[in-house]
Length: 158
Image (cartoon, rainbow, N blue to C red; front, side, top):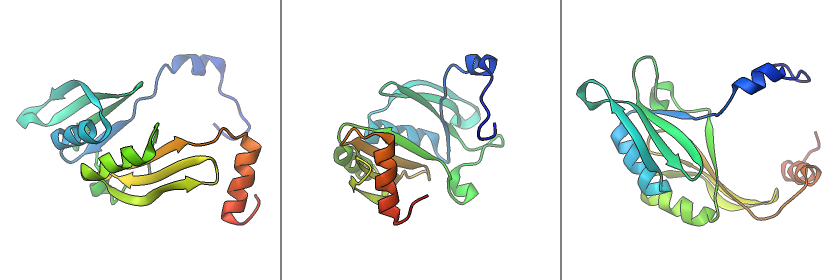
């Protein structure tokens, strides 16, 4: 919908959940990474010919996401030249999660550090090209204070 328009109540009532589906080049290895690095629990795995993962469901805290091997018209980030989606994790200890991710093979895009908008956060890329923002809340701020600090951080108002 366009800015300023509202979603009709009937459409809102049809949406019950949002589950990201990560397309990867090696589904089995990706599941190993997500369980080791993030503590994800594998809930289900369905394979096609040759053991290719066509759908695997993982649980991470209260969230669910899926992993599948590239194919059937679904390209993985390396095939696309990168990913424009960032998976955002809110965690109790950003440093510990970031360290676990790097030990398991993730690379640091932006180091974990304190940010003026009230979080300790950083961005990592997993070995399959997906981007993850790991964020630990440090302060409870009102939206106007977050905007003021964001303006100051970027050196300009909106």
